Length: 348
Image 1 (cartoon, helix red, strand yellow):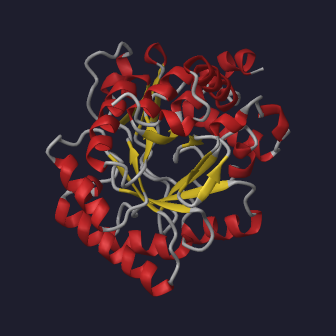
Image 2 (cartoon, helix red, strand yellow):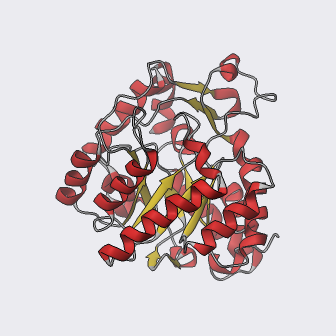
Image 3 (tube, one colour):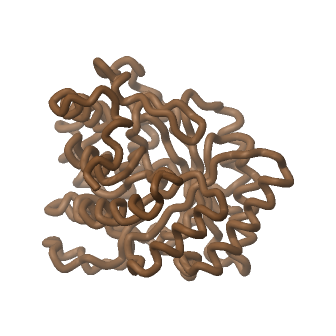
């Protein structure tokens, strides 16, 4: 069905097509068993104190305001991350702000954390409940005077209603956000959030999402701060605002974060570097160009325990999680591997 609809959808502005997808998913059109696959138990993995039916997750950015996460779980995803959520509702940057680079199976976006804000989203999740594993990605408002305070406010509001919380320090579209990659600034932020965990006596998994544009010299610093502050997982990576030289489409010069196929090797190489330094102390969630069983397996071999995708969903449609699961299972069988956990880091 998607192959028939895709030409129509791709004639629409990307944001219009996205809004149409959200409206369609609100109708909850697909039965869950339609996206189950044979031998899916080979993809079962236990992480973050949770049992994942499979490691394929939908990254933050698609369901920004937690409107359709249960419908997305029915499409076969092992987990869904909503957001980025800011304390106060915001429109984001001026339109147009999303661009397709079809020749490269890529997107550039400069959305700027458009979302309904903490109160609406928190109440929506409480009302709707959840049929699977849900994480929330939190960030600061554009006009805030205190980004750390915004992070803490987001954490306080979601720590008892979702399965994990991701601190987004890596979007290229919010000024000053990537400054939190600095060792001292990151440590200060994590100390404040861990103090909230201690006060509230809730040990919810806390993840950080890292930029692909960091220098290699920053990796040991981030790893050390993450270990010292008991981070539960590191998401590698967010979008990149560089790496445009090999792109074909004229829209490659648009300002914003590049995602999709061009990010595939960049993020996988960063996963390998982090995996060696982490030495099994913190799991990695691999993101960037995951659009097939092959690309998913490459990230697992590099050291990722879980995976997320977004751009692949845009280009391949609602069956992508099912397709990747089938392809991954076939790869595991060919390699003589009984469970996906046994493949993690085998390529490093």
